[in-house]
Amino acid sequence: MQKTNGHIAIIGGGTAGWLAALMLQKAASAHEQPQPRISVIESPNIPTVGVGEGSTSVFRQVLFDLGIDELEFLRETGATIKFGIRHAGWRRDRKAYLGPIDDPNALTQPHRNAPSNWLHHARIRAGKSASGAHLFSSLMNMRKAPVAKSDEGLIPLSPFHHAYHFDQARLGKFLARKATGIEHILTEVESLERDESTGHIKSLNCSDDQSIPVDFVIDCTGFRRAIIGGLGATWHSYSSMLPLNKAMPFWLKHDSAKDMAPFTDAQALDAGWMWSIPLQDRTGCGYVFSDAHVSPEQAQAEVEAHLRCKIEPRGLISIDPGRLDKAWIGNCVAMGLSQSFLEPLEATSIHGTIVQALILTSEQPSSLVGGEYDQNAESYNKIVAQQVDDFADFINIHYAGGRTDSEFWRDVSSDGIAQRQRVAIEKWQTSPMISQDFEHLPWRLPHVEEQLYLPVLDGLGLLPKSASKSAIPDIATVKEARKLLEKQSEDFGKASRQAMGHREYLEFACNS
Image (cartoon, rainbow, N blue to C red; front, side, top):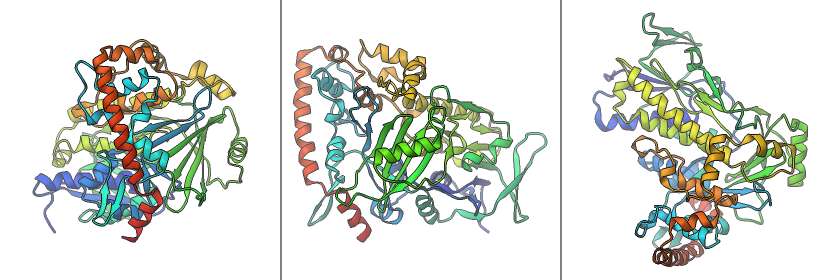
């Protein structure tokens, strides 16, 4: 047997488990000999709901880093393209707005002393939507792919990473097939053997009577929290600011008269909101609602009235939004749904898993398999807590659009917006939203900052012209911004017209 440098055991497969395994393996293979043994220990008896999930753009970068071809990924997982989110019904006037995930400001340097998001402010001060400056908004509206087809092959049309929609179960299986050199052990972990002096996990006692020695454990068992739950972690709830506590998932057939939407649709309803996530073979949907305001039966009736068709719910999921107070305890780290769970509004779950894996791999994986963990664990827990707290704040602020036409929306408007978010909104009435308003994660890890906040707050009608005027008061800077915006608009329009249709691109991927 090849000599290894300790054993890192990941408990639970799925997207989180296999992503963690592949990212740890890549980090170890770049530098270390001998490499740590990495295994994924997965229960063969855990069912999945599988009604569609979305990622952020950082997921695409990870796929590339792992050497995974996009066409193969689309073909094997049934995934689709995601350029952002369409929010409908979140405002007082019920108008829809787009939340694209690209950033036109990144294509240019700000003029003179203008802030880094100067093009957004130039749009707002001119009375135009910030999202209208985005290439991804154009592609969303036209239901296009990020590529054009030529005799030489596919031509990328975007300098930005897009995101994806996928079925979690199919994605997990695809990643497992890519995990060459990672052990896959199908068994149920029933109990832990722990060191009497340190409390560290020494071995895992499994249902098939085997005992598996371990040096470091990553808990990816989802809501069960099968490992970290026995180590003293407690739950920090966000229920006061994220009151939706039930999710009713279901499937819909595609509308054959339309091309597939390259975006997540988030439709606000009377007691929450409904997601629609297009996959290649069907659309995964679900109503996330507050059962303090409607019963499950009333929720289903509301969805059916909205869609004008019957649905077949695939169960009812209970949600307690929050995070662990400590994601790293002893020689165990919880990742993915084991560590936190929020409303599925902004695809924070997989994004969080990736960032957490990036933090773990910021040092050599061999550092995880022995020695003292206190300093690393304290730093890790602080960063991850900030990450999830910021996610919760971002989701919470989506509810600040001023709807008061149902009991749920009246309650949210009066008591549901966190005080720190109310203070931020008040500040942005007179001061422009800029990068310095946000606390960045260490090493500038990808995070929720002004490039995502601004289109949402502008879409909700909460960013006045006057604040953006103060961001770029110099008329020469304003003229330069308008010139660049006109040029970008022309280029983005041309690219969108040349782009393949979304369904056409997916069919090409499946046949390539």
